[in-house]
Image (cartoon, rainbow, N blue to C red):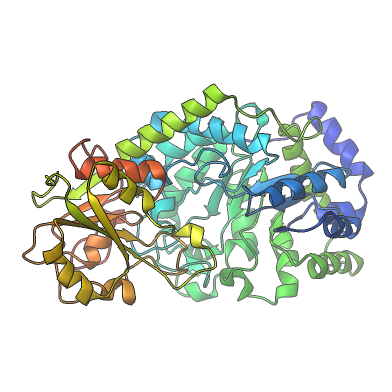
Length: 544
């Protein structure tokens, strides 16, 4: 547990709190997303709203580094710098996603993964990781969990996340955030688009999600991120789940369940307030206030001007007391002290030996994660010398705003060419072209690449991605290999595909590893950490 001790930490927290103006206190309840802004722009923001934390999505850019330096330079109290770190720090070592690590059986590597992430993050000025996800992937149709989940049982999730949390927080370099309370993965809603629902009865929830959350608190996780997710049965609303409010706006979940029942007393940071699962429930100008009134501490992605003024007015009009604000500010300051921000906001970067060791761990996990889900006897492939091969990437081409989410699989082609083969590459072609290609190439590699959040609300092969396969060009041609780089469930949609390799991600190491497995240079050692759905019905993993 994170109880505030009667030590130097308490003295620093109380002394700092006593020195803060109301504006500084309200600033400590806000975590905006700050992009590429000039020093003058950031200084102007801080002059009115002295922020306690800030989020950077472009963490690996020079602009983010400059922005962090400017924030710290213009802030009397050190600012917590946050980022999503679901695959590592993002600007150094990039690890395989959660499900890939589980497929590799990499439980013993998770503590070290956490330590590597913490060192790399802190050396770049980041202190707060909005990870790990601790959701349980009970429903294969859930697009919020998927590869972000460690598996479909509480035990598998705990085996992976508990050592990861301990590694991330060792030495006070980085604060981990367990998300998304009370837990998603049972229904198939996406909180980006609406309030997701956890439909479990309270007893079932306690035996599954409750067990995971309690274990995270025992491991000392510093913060929790409630999602825009409801738990109707906890409120007696199982008969009317649409009436249940998301955790981010719900005292029954943030106070009664998270604080009182489960005993968490660290920092509660909301999921992004702009998401429809929250913003569709009450007027926007009331969201941050309601979040705080119902038990939250820090509101993620506020409208700075509007929400700051609204909070000041709430105090003036008696909707919110300064003593309630102080409760949350104390928790934020306590976390800052645990992270040693009163001494230093950065640490020394890892040396070359540490970087090499981290890269080796990523290589091992990536290679061990490759999973052979189905094999019709064509794998491993015996390609003739100087074979003419075609690689086909099937991906969503409609969202060009964030191309990094679905990059080209170029390294696959480079690896095949390095072995002397002639390689052509097509990107989501017409089905007629694929039908003709079967006769023209010695082998065709169909690479399915529709990763999480490349298309909000969907991970399935739809529209043009699915229409590539009209006329089932592969039937009768045993020289086609199917590989999923992002989704283990494609065989549910296309049950007649003769083979399926899973790589769990598009990292360079994963691309190199899958080529080795295709060609028989390496055994597929991965084990799928989730049950495959029945061919003719919904996922019932919870009852198995």
